[in-house]
Amino acid sequence: MLALRIRVFGVQATASLFSSSSSSYSSSLTLHRKPPYFFNLSRRRPLSCSSSSVEQDPSIHVVTAPKCAKAPVPETVKFVKRALFVAPGVEPEEVREDMILPGSNIVLGPYAGHAQIKQVEFVKSSSKPKDCPKDDRPEFAILGRSNVGKSSLINALVRKKEVALTSKKPGKTQLINHFLVNRSWYIVDLPGYGFAKAPESARTDWSSFTKGYFLNRETLVAVLLLIDASIPTQKIDLDCANWLGRNNIPLTFVFTKCDKMKGGKGKRPDENIKDFQELIVKNYPEPPPWIMTSSVTGLGRDDLLLHMSQLRNYWDN
Image (cartoon, rainbow, N blue to C red; front, side, top):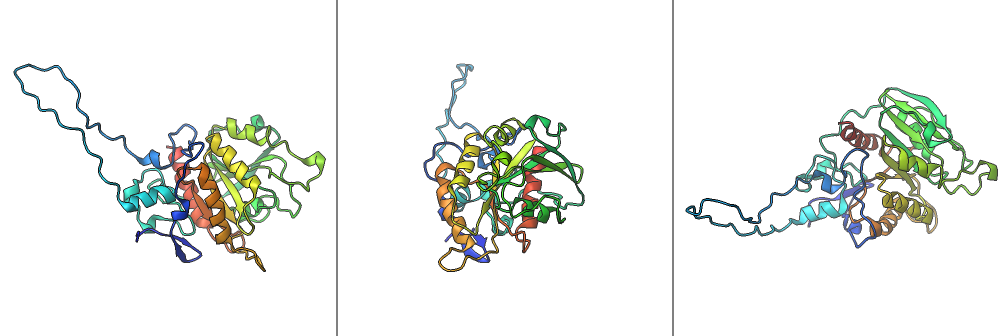
């Protein structure tokens, strides 16, 4: 039995369901201006053990060492590589169970730091990506299907009501909204996708509007892609995740509404999360980070901020 486990709702569950399979593209997504922040980021380049010809004094007898044999990979390291998001500065073999954030596959590393939000202020709304703030502060974009709980998550993260507009009417956010946190980094509220009930005049051309932001925003640290854990996997969420992956946009899956339990024959949130992961892993040979949250109970709030802090601090150094 492997020592490492991921805790979901207090129940130990192995992460074998997230094991890699063949895929159409790599999930080694990149932080802008930084190397990939998935597993290969924390690996050091191995020393070459193969021999090479060198001109030397013929009187000197040179003994050529054989090529180094590959050492077997411990089972625990295999588990870490197929199941966990290893943070910058951590080697897979260094991972301990107490380093894994509860209700997630995220390993904390040395870049995790100050995560407390003391101040937040609305800066501006932009109708075009080129109109967004032009300073060099890092930012996290919050994206998801309409009515997934984007605004509620933002309000929960900053512990302020009505910082982001909440509404039962899908499609309420129609602009790129920047909120400055601690005068040092941004939370960006993006228009939701798939809001079929929004009036035609208010619908956003997601392809040209939001995608333009992703492809051209150099200060983007990561996308927090929100997935509703209280309902079965939605194809539109998979399509969005796959588009981000194909375009090397770093992301973290944030599962919302994990406190809700569907009645009747509906599945529990952890079961829906398992189903989603089994589908998404087909296109991600290395596991993207994911975490469970609830804006009602506060589940995952502090841990998500810790995760964001280590990505932000790595980006900023």
